[in-house]
Length: 490
Length: 113
Image 1 (cartoon, chains in turn green, brown):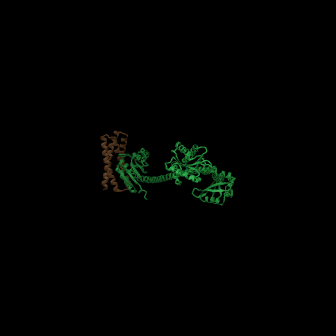
Image 2 (cartoon, chains in turn orange, blue; image 1 turned 45 degrees about the vertical axis):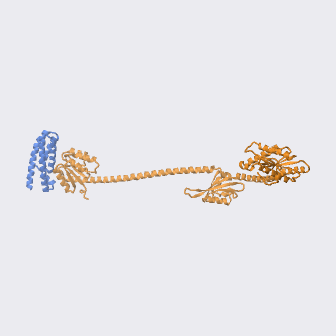
């Protein structure tokens, strides 16, 4: 590229003659130039930034040369080479021009060779300046890029720091967990151990050491069966441990060698990525419980045997008993024995006697309403009342259910009737706990005509039936009209 | 001889038409500045006087009007020193030189044409 053509030159000269000469010289040397007549126009042109060289007169209307120089140097404009035109004589002007920011000067009248030399020097300086500016711009760009890279590095460093902190935190938590596990594991009051996937012992807690007499440093790396013994750890148990170490948990495994009893549990252990790394096994000693259970079983068996013995004894006892269990008065069997005895005495010419059958009125209904315990209470009360209300020689027995039998000894019907009436009244007079209790009574005298005690009972029964029919709570004696009806009223 | 024609020849590279152009331009400019100097004396405006003298000095130097250039420089100096009375004396000398210079140049133009 032609050195001259790359430069644009502004000429600020108010003298038309000088500017014409200058313009022609620039033209001749291939410089592109523009001429303005005063300082204000010159500043307007220069401030567009499109001139690389300014040739300005020292004295001009509007703005003078030095002021334009100062303005250019104080601006942000791209470098502009300034040549000031001065009179040959004005030495001070030259110095002032350079001080004001001018780069060079030319004296008037203009010498063409001087002009060209100045322009070549100026052009070189302009190019150097532009190069410098370009490099500066590049440098600035590089600096900006460097700053960006630097910022990115700082950001990455910060990210790295955060990650490191997280890692530290995670590692701290992991440490805590490990410590907690270790404390828990060692502190467990149960024999406890872990195995790897190879089924060999990996950890062995203090309780296990105590219990099985193997210190941890000797236990680690060995097979559980070697440590616990093959009796305690049978094939099934070994299988369970191996399965647990492959991910299959088990609980409540019954491990025992006959002397020691354990409930064993095994749970798989998992690594950080979820893979099974082995298993943890714990043994609960249930030997004491098992022994207690065995003892209890033994005792229960003894108790059962005793109970069976007791029952058969009771049965035997019942078969020979004479008193009614509930009321404490003679029972049905005793009644028959006594009746037979009394009848035998009579037949041998002894005393007459009357049989009374007394039945508690509406007893079934009472039971239904107040329950059997209340019913039992009533029966006891009636039994006691009957016993108290009879003479010492009379016999009171529980005939069955709510029915009582009384043998009035040494009595005929005439004598027996008021005695029976006394019984009825005594019962009626009982203070009612649930409700008033009454009895119906049937009487029958044993005589030569009666024949058998069975017939006697039948007749008394018939009389009782009559008393019930008569409205209950009354006494009836047997008459031949009553026959020996079997029907009964409660 | 008011003008150094050799100098003019030199700065114009002996380009006759440019010489003529330049001389005509100078004549116009010099007449205008001469009038301005007269006015400045009348209005006693020292600053205007100095400016006009300075401009005339530059123009004259450019074309080789050496006599006029010297007269303008003297006036410029007086005005610059604020020696108004001295300046007025020199204005007369300048006008003489201006008159002579213009006359010589116009004759040169006629000859050249």
